[in-house]
Length: 307
Picture 1 (cartoon, rainbow, N blue to C red):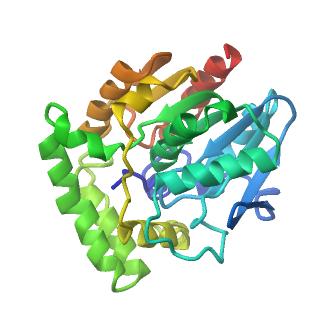
Picture 2 (picture 1 turned 135 degrees about the horizontal axis):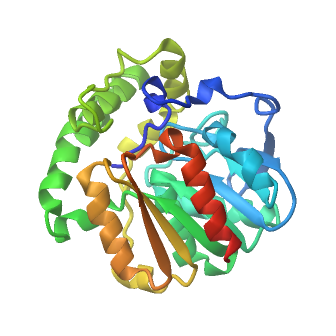
């Protein structure tokens, strides 16, 4: 499982993706990375920054950030293999963040970005952790926003209940619903997150109450969740010993009002990572980059400047 749906939150956030200037973003470049073709947007010169979106999102999620990052860095925002506008990738029965990490490694090598700063959110941050473990030579630093390493929860204090809750309300219902079709699957996921209090407010988030254009964006990225919910390895193993070996300096960004499971996982990451800083944004939820884009961007840029 993963807590994603950043685009869905555009219905209640002050800086929705759809409000941004779309100049140049409707004609991304393409690169062959292993067995897939990935679309990406690139701007700027200098050391490389690769931006990795969360679930039910795509490369356009980084649109509000690229201009600021590209003033100092060669900035690349790409779409993971099953996300818009990528097509043609066969559904892998073992699709997971490990597959995304391999794709990301291939992209970094093909575009000659190594060693790259990697800025990633949610399931994309899970992939970035696996990248740093499996391909340390490709990573200069990490900025991670609440990677959902859910396999840890059953072994962490308070984690078993949180794991059972998100599986029962989000993961299992959406997995069943995707067998009926993409809209049913996305609706079950969004409604399930609403039941968990994902928005951090009294306003319950549901798919039906989202604006039609936001629904369209989510459905454009439904193939990712369809494949993931049917995967045999949606949440690949990331042993604590592997995290202890990660040498890349890491900034952990968290939201004060995020789901409790994120705090549990982030505190474990804080305990394990040998070179890290942690910043919890007041009043922010898991959608911190949408809610507080300037604060997240400034914190990330300040961290990258030191490494």
